[in-house]
Image 1 (cartoon, rainbow, N blue to C red):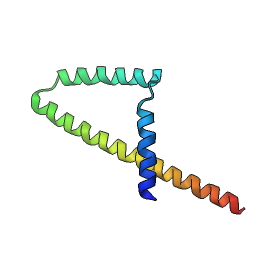
Image 2 (tube, rainbow, N blue to C red; image 1 turned 60 degrees about the vertical axis):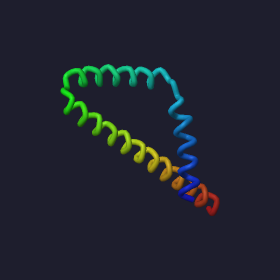
Image 3 (tube, rainbow, N blue to C red; image 1 turned 135 degrees about the vertical axis):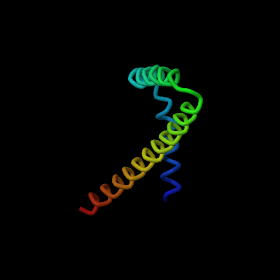
Length: 86
């Protein structure tokens, strides 16, 4: 079941990342702007450390989103099964 839920998650994630809503574009623009300001103030060693931290943060976000999605699906299925018993 875990493999199936992960497959569903990755399909959902691909669709979600194609969401080009105004809000998402604006937040991405603001983030890029602030990152540029920060990067310009850093030396090479600091830049490498911040890039490493951002990579780990991105990985953590992906794992957290996937876990939340799969737990939500499990909850939803269990809820429907319980409701059908009822």
